[in-house]
Image (cartoon, rainbow, N blue to C red):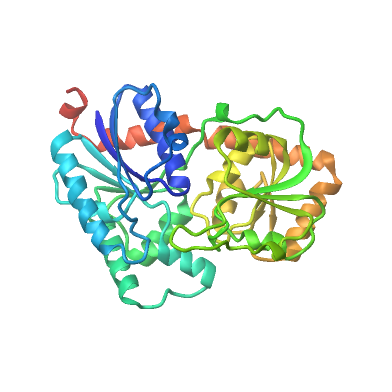
Length: 368
């Protein structure tokens, strides 16, 4: 089978794409990969080395959630249409809503990784303002979802949000994201510290919650401090207490070491359609302290300590439990590790997508 996959190079969608494409190619499938957003760095594409049957085409077109992206979306759709006509894939797997409405006879899977409207409701607790851009965004998301052959969400909660804000798709399903356990090290000696990883500029991640109270162990915040569309850092140096260490984005090797040594992982998000960073921490055998939001309950109930969302005191109390009790910390780490291995492996994710693809693609294409 030949699958055309789209991705963006900003955030977790690129990590998700790596796991999906690697799994597909290693199973003998042919993949054409088209990326949008920033042109990736050499470090971001290193995973492609040695993968056969992969045709990669990077572009720098804007993403649909970026302001003033309308012209780029039209141009990128035209480019994508040309790639489809040239490469003749059997199936299209889109990580953007916009392309779900492309005019072609090829089955189209649209993956709802996240959404501006559901983000706004979770973070701002109200509908986004009715600007021209928001009106355009709502229109293109709904059009893409309704035109797709199948819609996939990475959690039940995210699928419910899509239905609530954009209407019920013709065929909707949930496929949990996955990571390769062998990429992480669960056997390192743990330190009594707290780590979180993610976009510091995204208030949905709510990393600033870690700054509101002095926590009972050193805190390491790892991630980009600069919004991709603006200039300047989110956190000024004077807002950081001596107990908090703000660290830049890390490459895969560095992050494996950071999570491998971390005793506790803080999943502080107010908005999270899935959350790859907590999964990576669980595969590194970190104890999880998670915001009590529907997604984390769906994924980690029974394998994490929960605190009231956006409540600094509740976060402090949860952390104190684990910092004071090393046996409890080890127990919670083992629970998270087992849950991650059982439910959220990349192999299981690729299995689920292959089952979906085979149901959508005519049998004669599979045998071609």
